[in-house]
Length: 440
Image 1 (spheres, rainbow, N blue to C red):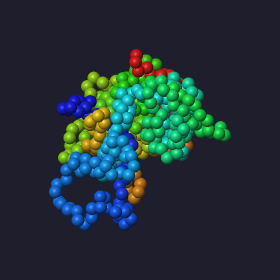
Image 2: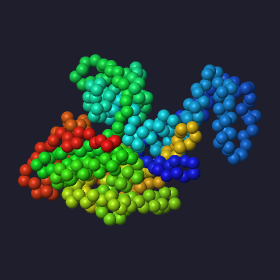
Image 3: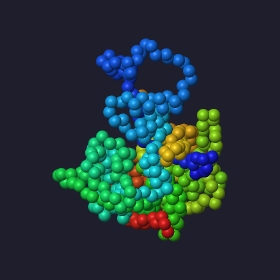
Image 4: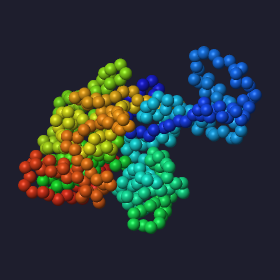
């Protein structure tokens, strides 16, 4: 973050939610005017349509004043009208990543990038009829309430999630510390949905988990789950642990990592790439804006083979890291095509605790690969292509319980065993590190 004038600028690499605005079309307006007199009985044809330059502020104020004066019922609150109008304006740009953040959305974005929030402590994903729990976080309210991976939250405080976007579901579940939230759960093997009441608490975002996947050959997996401010420090602790325990090979797992802070991604690459090397090129409307390089003094010199796992959930900052490590021949990529989000949003705080996220540039890997996917014939094409393509089953979940079906992980272990000239296959140990302390 750096201060420009009065605004704090957050450079993010995330997959944000899409806001869509709607408007009454000409046919709809015509249908209304056929059955209703014009507003204030003013003949439409007598209005003077000038070609003066539009004053956006005056146009909004004028429309708002007419709604407040003439709408037959009680109009929505002024903040809702204002936020909706801004979201509609930004949707006209046609960029799914340029968006408006009301105070609640802006607060949640700040929580996500700093690495802590108040809620129940569970990783969620979209599911039919609600939000599926990928896994509860260690020592979280969700664990204490008995929630399990695969549980589907179908209602929050009695409100159905049937037609609710995941981002909105998260907003409903989060809330002030020490307040209660009532979740309705659908669980496989349980005939009827049931309800649990959970007290929200401070939760540390999962950032780094470390697993010993092959005890005989000392092959470790680092699951880096986001690029928050804490990610580089937590990665350092993980690498130190691996080196102290005699690690011989590393799997950097970036699957399901949606991104985070650009600076954090630069820091992560700097741990694995020696010398002053390009991590990413930033290209704007006028061409090359800057090149970001590895940071002096961050290189860890692991002296062990490494591979990177990616899938369709690896986006933005994850793709920058994966692309840089491959281009600098540090590690091959194993798995499936990444998401393809090579655009950067600059988050600029506006008035009264709101903000706008505006797409300001795109990113290229050190070799010049454009990370951003394109839509061709209705299909999304782009992102990083793995060096070794391996698809997991469609119903595979990134949990300890489903590790036996993780074909991508098995391929990564196979590649590293070959690099180590291993004569036998070791067993995985549940966790080399049960929890990475963030306030040590």
